[in-house]
Picture 1 (cartoon, rainbow, N blue to C red):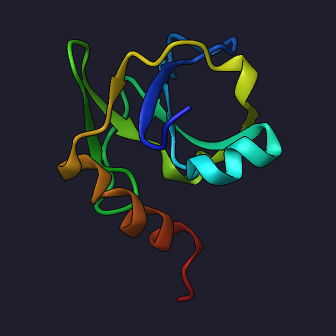
Picture 2 (tube, rainbow, N blue to C red):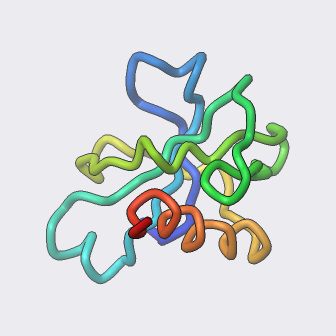
Length: 103
């Protein structure tokens, strides 16, 4: 499992959240068997910094729903369908900072 890989959502809300982005580094995932993911929502409105648009190669653009970040057992994530581009990777840290930062 590689950081920034995009996986099909194995859960029940596939229509609303078709993909999950693995954002945890591989070293931690290999030790815990779980990984931190951020949902990619279809038909959602982007929000400046916190919920940017992310491109999934061959599937289109989705909203990175950073406020819904969670941990999933890595065994539930099967084959990745894509990997985030460098441009989209650069959107993740500011999005997480926006969600958990002090105001």
